[in-house]
Image (cartoon, rainbow, N blue to C red; front, side, top):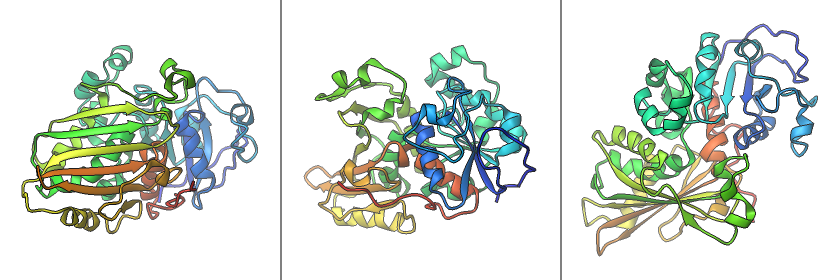
Length: 370
């Protein structure tokens, strides 16, 4: 459990009860909103500080009347000292590059951090700078050591490290959906290292809440389009963990697509089996064995393929597998809600581990269907 701190008086309007207190920074964006929704129903964790730059000084009801919070708190300018007085944990849902301006100060004050951005997903600050070029050019960073110390927040693979971590870098939605079905086969050496292809499709909420022309209803509706076909930012993030698990360098082709729905992500991964005698049932058994103790992962029967509606508003990832025996091609499929298991829900899953709670605490695993 996190160390308790002495509460100070506050005019934020949020309860200052001692316990597992969480600050949510970037509260009115999609990641922050979803985090607050989950914390509002959480039996142990409580939001005690709302932070935001553009929304600072406004009552929560002015910003998000559809999600009422107790005492209608005021959103405040993020301050490491204020956060440390009123929170044990901080979830940062900020644009790439901005979290790194606040994280070192929070860690100095013994606030444990879950970062939903990409600032600490890479082991090397140099590699981050090469991938996030614009952010690196506009923001000064000197926290290379923190990049090495941060734990990649994929709970099904890094739970012990997350539980004791001071800084957790939650994965992106595309890496989460793609890595969960792929890693077991890389770990056991069942597939070839080359020729890996990931075809992924996401809803428009993956682009964030800020106004963007290509996400307008008139632009995105009744249309599907690829983007970032070569060199998408998530490619190297996926390759990093895939290489660590495989024990050698992995390079793959990743192509994302924008589809006309609000939330949901479907990833299809193609690989070549080393043993042409392996069947879909064999590969299904591999997935079931690896994830048998992980309630946030479901493995579907062979011949049943996941749909994004089946995981909507849940922290569940549904996996499926098929084998084309003509070509020894393994086809892996994964569906997640990009805002929950692909973002805020996974962040809360990490918070649960850090707080000594079962990882699925306060997270829905059953969809509201249809």
